[in-house]
Amino acid sequence: MRCVSQAVASITARVRERVQRDRIELSAGAEANAIVESEVRSYAERALVSDLPLVLDEAQTTAEVLAQVTGFGALQPFLDDPEIEEIWVNAPSRVFVARNGVPELTSTVIPEAELRDLVERMLLSTGRRLDVSSPFVDASLPDGSRLHVVIPDISRRYPAINIRKFMRRIRDLTALVERESLTSQAANFLRCAVQAGANVLVSGATHTGKTTMVGALLGSAPVSERIVTVEETFEIDLVARDVVAMQCRQTSLEGTGEITLRRLVKEALRMRPDRLVVGEVREAEALELLIALNSGLPGMCTIHANSARDALVKLATLPLLAGRNIDSSFVVPTIASTIDLVVHLELLPNGQRQLREILAPTGAVHAGVIEASTLFERERGLLVATGVKPPRLDKFERRGIDPMPHLVPEW
Image (cartoon, rainbow, N blue to C red; front, side, top):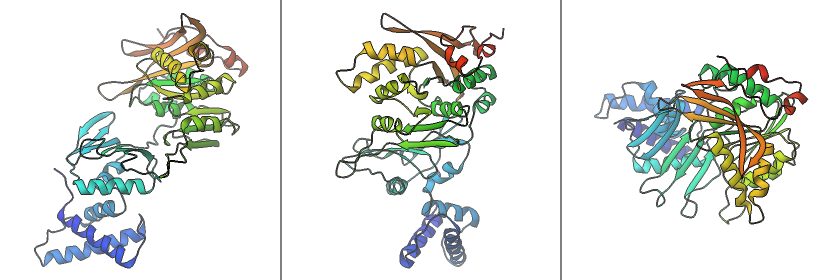
């Protein structure tokens, strides 16, 4: 088991005493490095003439102490490792990471007291809180990674921590093609769709790469567009000339000040967007999104679903949560006429994320079911075009875009 060594614990304690005594505001940087290096050298000299554990590698010890006093302790090496995409802690001796979609149990052990301190340090920069009345938190760490924590007595004994790291490697569809998540033919069609202002619903199970796909799709948006994104917590990695990103806010200690996703969608419409992006629709905010799309505003969002057709069914259900005066006679036809494409993703057992199918609603509804055509699907593991013409080509034609060359089956 990998645990904080006695030497690191001792040096960390001395650094914290020094910081408190001298009233130093310690943060990552040259000053922190200098203080820690000084304490490491001092400890190493004392260890040579005493029974203290020796420091075998001063540079490594310095890095570990810095992680304790300015970073996130035992989790910092995982946060610094570019190959690790997710970290979660179930108990002191149950620290997991995921590399390329494959989970593994690490040898790291985080004592219970240190685990509680770690949660408090992570929350310091978020402006969010955890207590008996609010036992869950969903927040962004300083590097943009998404943090989710559940504390007892909701969790059994220990805080349950999940960190989904903020990955900057995938900016466009070309990067996904290189990872074999989709074919260049499908990527070219999707570029045309985004440039034409198509409304895209990205669906899939957890960890299938929905947010990554949204970011890659938005990389094809016209440079002149003003994009407004709304999310529970910031996750979408977007580089654009004109972009506004907003996230929700929890209630204050007084029970006031909450900003919901539904409220953010309404506010976004007042900000002159050329494209509205909702990180994920889960509840009644789906109604505001559909109303916005029905007004002609291009949009994009993600949703949890088992298939592209299931995604349409679920999207038709969520707006009903908005109130009794909303029923399927309005919602279902609105979805059929506004959603242009459903891009469904899947996660394979080996950790590979891939595009499973692309569906295009026709605009028709039969017996309450939205009719849709399959444009791309997997056959024997290969993503192929079906040769079906998209039902609504008018959006492409208005922008002078011809998607048909990218829809010819490559048999």
